[in-house]
Length: 165
Image (cartoon, rainbow, N blue to C red; front, side, top):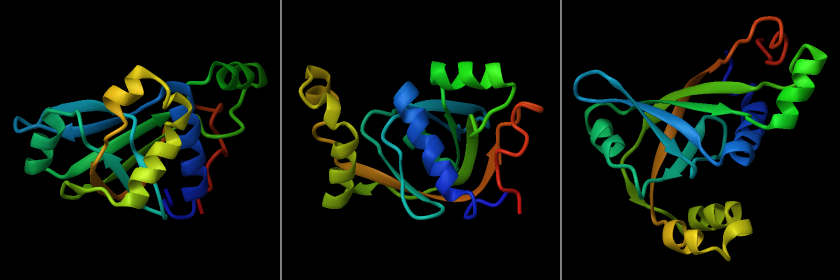
């Protein structure tokens, strides 16, 4: 599928996905060739095919990326209202899920702009103890260059939700 042509729809889906579940699933491959999935809430999509995520807590994922930089990110809109409306209609009016495939870059210090983008995303919970413990001092990021996308298909329910041309 056309990554660049669908980028605005992908970004909208990622926004809905974050609102409904507070994370995305990022798959990497370990040294034995086994998949490993890590929940990451800090992924921020930018220009077409570009993204960054803050890497503060993952343990295995950084080790896996030293061996193989390929990643697959799954975003699912898990909103109950979205699903209920879609089930009642018998179709999705917007995509419910997508996989993005790409290559992760090297870990590096975040720019001030990247930190501001992250803090804007979590501003609603900045008063919380959890925010202070987990998200107030995020400082290291990895870039991901996405190479292609793969829609999650659900038969007739997902027909015509992506631009295929």
